[in-house]
Amino acid sequence: MPDSPLATQLLTPPGSPTLTDRLALRERPVGTPLLRQEWSDLLFMHWPVPAALLQPYLPPRLTIDTHDGMAWLAVVPFRMSKVRTRVSPPVPGADEFLELNVRTYVHLDGVPGVWFFSLDATNALAVWTARTFFHLPYLRANMRMESPSAQLRQFTAKRTHARTPAAQFRATWNIGAPLPPAEPGSLTFFLTERYCLYANNKDQTKLYRGRVAHAPWPLSSVQVLHYESSLVESHGLPTPAGAPVLHAGGPVSVELWPMQRV
Image (cartoon, rainbow, N blue to C red; front, top):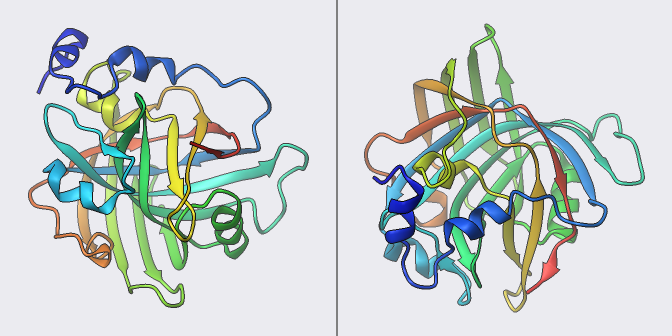
């Protein structure tokens, strides 16, 4: 896979975001963010899949974003904390929770972003807020993360949201040495440096885009010691084949702006 900006530019399909488009999103948006929070203890698990497999699962206006001709499907567990609005401090009991998402990468009008198939979370208020104000497919779940040592993480989840396909997740991973910053144009940059998200409303008639700002991800190598999951399959997608591309990430302080219709 290409690891230089020039190689990536040459392989960019017509209509896809350029490297300049991707770098532009690292600039902090103007205005005041709606939410602030911190993301930590992330495990990025990415599998390459044919773009044609995922495209039918997207709203008509979105196009799968690819790197070297391949789409990418991800499962990402992590901890969210210090959650607060622009006008209020953290609310005890609602300012920290676990999250687990299934995602891919898309673009619209040259703007690359994240498309979430699901976002399971432990906090009922967070689920309601995200579904109501961000149009995101958040779902209730029971989750637990344990840290037997400074490097070891154990994460379990079981979806409990009513009238949705059942799903479970269990993983254990060991965080390794810090990695250098993701080089623009590299696969790591493509997979982790994402500052925009897309969502549609409940009846899928309106499409929204939201901006996110944070420092570039501090990444580390990681070894997954155990993994079992039915999250991807709960969306009707086939089980990802082969070993995933792995990164551990965080912590980062994050700002989120209101969703805008596009």
